[in-house]
Length: 519
Image 1 (cartoon, rainbow, N blue to C red):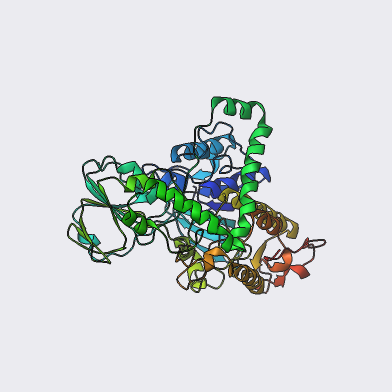
Image 2 (image 1 turned 120 degrees about the vertical axis):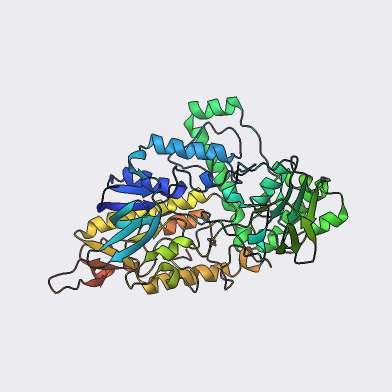
């Protein structure tokens, strides 16, 4: 980037959210934007997570943009390499490469209330932007527990999202820490080649069969020749998941049948009653994300695998000690311990209008307006923000809804004209979050009896959307200017007006429909 470059929009991150934002900006006729990416290529979490067995647990035709259908998916559930290739394809087809700024990690961004713009310091220089779209994603910064003794461990240590491909696991004694979505893919992938694999399981997951298969050549030919068949396939996958939402959000008791199916899935693969007891969860299915695998349980029954039904407590030299006193001598430790989701690191780098960071404002829990904007941070938006996650469907659906909101946000700034900014009203943020949290109270994620990464340090669910994707799309179709205050550039007196948007001339609110969180 050139020194003191100014752009209309700065997008942070080049995963699904960032690339989707870039495509939508171009489709809105906006070309004065950049995509700031800390790495050297696009892909986000699908670039960073390259561990053995890495794949998506959402069907391929649903885990892709509606505006960029891919008729040539090789499997019903795609592997990491295919998803990353798809994102590279999207980048090229929509002409995004001129907008990309690789190796440009955002160090700090601060709102300039005199100029009504963001000053952004990156590892490659400084630039300013009228609007910032943060698409860093919740699965971008690995979370490694502070285990006593880990610094003095003589072997190899790495997180699943930072896989060391130069380290040969063959013949090694390996410890897998965690039993989340990454771990259940890694365990069966590395089990055949390691000398011994010890799984430290703090909480067993519910695991359902993975109905995965190769998509036939005839199917792929049909999707290429008749594009509506791709859309129909996507629509069917979406509809099935929309029908499941009621059980997760309003009637968790209905999930008992799913629990029985998951129990049978385990019983077919695990014949040892003692091992089955270790692997059986004591919470309602769905409270944590339901995992999909046909190979995880069989791998755990192999003679070179030990399951320790306790979390890792400390490390003494090469000896790992569990909370229950169990020990294991290992050569390598792999942490499959998730990411900073409810305490996103980017929040420490965003300084708002009052001089406080977003992390400081969110210290009591993340809050935003419609999962997108935060009070005191004008012209700043986030993709996959608070309470936009899903427990049973594709995040691409939520991302596209937020792209609708982003596009209308920029349009409203055009309607306002001149040097203007929109700042979410604190009462609107509180009203939205109050309704979301009220709906959350009866969901399986809050009542299922587990402690998951959906919950923040205070036990508040700031991650999941407690409704259907249809409801969220309706709630984010347009910006309600009544939920914002308009900021104008300073006048001769040195202070610019801060006016409720609903009272601003040409605010564009005539005929606008307000959609509440409880819609």
